[in-house]
Image (tube, rainbow, N blue to C red; front, side, top):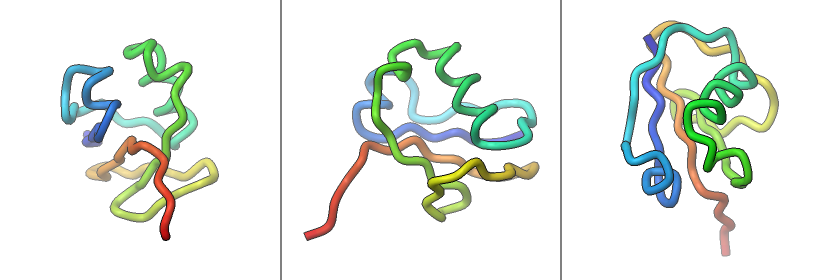
Length: 76
């Protein structure tokens, strides 16, 4: 299983702070699954972290991973 966590407006849009999902091979597949389950994500801009590391490209997800959908942020 993979834990998918939602932060900020994504927690509001999905109505949950986290869910467990069956295995998916990579972040692209997970994003498509989450957009189908939670249509509000379709038009949203977000950042993704896998096991506490920000990712910007399709990334392999292994059993037991934690994936976070977060609002974009900037430093300053």
